[in-house]
Amino acid sequence: MHAEAWDGIKNGFQSGRLAHAYTIVGSPRGNALHFAESFLKLLFCERAEKPCNECTGCRQVEAHKHVDTLWIEPQSKSRQILADDVRGLIRRMSQTSFDGGWKAGVILSADCMNESSENALLKTLEEPPPKSILLLVTDSAQSLLPTIISRCQKIVLSEGNANAVNELWHEPLMNILHCLPPTGGLDAARLASQLKGILDVVKEGIADAVIEELDQNDEALDESKLKVILEARTNARLKEVQADVFRVMLDWQRDVLLLTSGIEQENLIFSNDWNMLEQQAKLHTQGSALKAMQEIEAISRRLDRNIPAMQIFDEAFRKLVRR
Ligand SMILES: [Zn+2]
Image 1 (cartoon, rainbow, N blue to C red):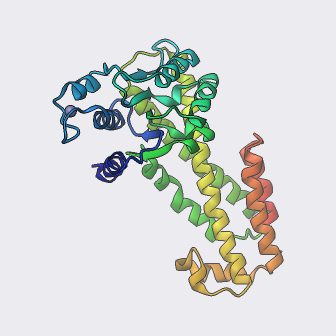
Image 2 (image 1 turned 30 degrees about the vertical axis):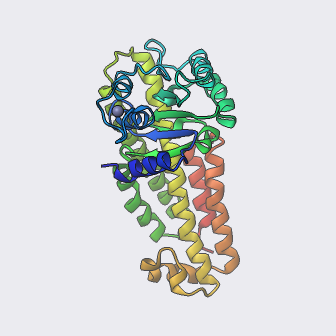
Image 3 (image 1 turned 135 degrees about the horizontal axis):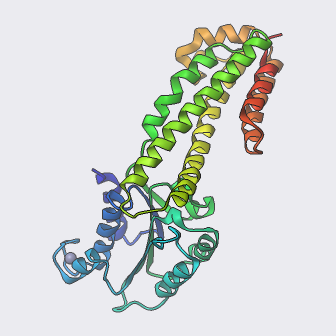
């Protein structure tokens, strides 16, 4: 199923070009866990045809008992990966390996690292020990610090419910874009509340997906911790989707701007909507189209500052009203 990702790792191993750290995105108890195990078997298998799944090395990896690999995961009580555990892992990875070969560290559910754990890890990612491999296994890579993500090679096995979530917003958003620019204040308010409605539906969809994931987790969590995890994960993913939503809005307005500058149809992103775009371009000057783009850019900046969404959308769409 993940043939391409697996081939990449195998080739990297054979040609001596493995990265020092990987983020494996998928289920930490399912596909991503198995991928990490196979990865390590490749390093520690004792036979020519690697991984054989039969030799002592392979079997020790499978049992998470290989002497040159340390696995850490969230503490069952706090659901957090503690900085002490991360430091222990780093220490082990910095020591000479048992037989002069590879040393590996695996962090399961790496998104459960708290701030001090992540900071402890960062130093190692900057100066990795030689012949060492660090694997971060997670189903929500977006919860990791961007500085961590950027220092790891990313292997995506499954993006969770990303596609299902995209279906929730894409078409309704296009319907809004087709109505731009608003005809007046009332129309602006209507479009603003539609946009708010879309994001509310998206948030519900994301929360449902997160609840499902938490349900699959066989550890018993108490209610208050569940709530905290649910909210943190939902908000982190919502932020990503919001960024996508505003990128589409910006792309649309950019097309309008290009048309006011007399750009050819084939250079448009939404070339299928050419008629609609051209009608909108006629209601703009180059200057007003540019201003509209800036208004949309301002929306996401203001959302980051925790101003209520409805207020932001209302004001933004009001500024987009056709003159
Ligand atoms: Zn083997």
